[in-house]
Image (cartoon, rainbow, N blue to C red):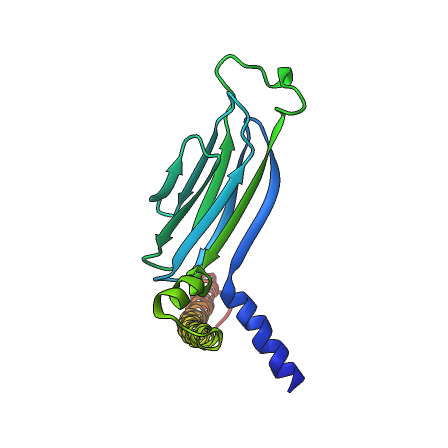
Amino acid sequence: MQISSSFVILWISLINSIYCISFHLPISTKKCLKEEIHKDTIVTGDYDITSVPGFPTHLQVKDTKGHILYNKEDAVKGNFAFTTEEYDIFDICVETKLPHGQQKHHLSGSQASKEVNIKIKHGVETKDYDALAKANKLKPLEVELNRLEDLSSAIVSDFAYMKEREEEMRNTNESTNNKVLYFSIFSMICLMSLAVWQVLYLRRYFKAKKLID
């Protein structure tokens, strides 16, 4: 029972999907974070970047097809949100730019890097249960029940997605195995045909040379 509870807690923590990271980004450097997200999922992000006058920071969110979902040339503090149309890996790129004519080695210690804080939420965690409680005048227990219901739906959805991916992988494996089998049979037939042809050719050759009867 303890194992089951631990597994449920771990799974719920994965479903919550709060992705928060903080790092220092040197000037004139680009760093991209990758996030793998399912189809029809709401994604929200909050960012807080150290402001250094004269050194703007470019923040951009895009998918693997190059579609730009969020773009901010001088990002300091703000947020973004979008809904995924299909399963994809999304890039959250942050780049600090060096002004034209400015040399990197001339920067002071406080200008050499910026602190970047990014917090990503997707799935159930993007829902504002406090606002829901106020709008519908729900009691704390009712809010928690709503939250658990959403978590349960998310878990069921994730299991269905995992099952679908497992079926796709199984079909791919079976198809690959069949192709390998057919290729092996074809190769064996070719080798056997070549061996028979070599025997017959050598037999005719030796007969022509009168080395055998």
